[in-house]
Image (cartoon, rainbow, N blue to C red):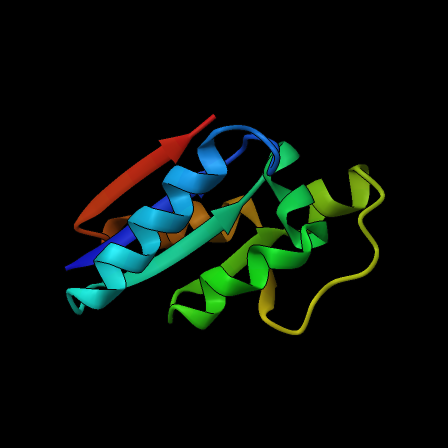
Length: 101
């Protein structure tokens, strides 16, 4: 199964632990996981331990426009720049879409 986790909440909200545990569990079961950071979700790029999401085997993408708007300039190597337009084009490829706001 291919799962998209769409994140617009700040990384220090209670959602982080849920997202981390969910990502880990899905990957352990062999599912493909893509996390897409948009809006305030781009602040995940600044959270030091957020790399573990990538280390679990999830693909981490972010909206470059949101990052630019919020002054997020240091982009970690484990995250891929994208756009919400690209996200809208990819959505049909996913079996499940979960949103955290």
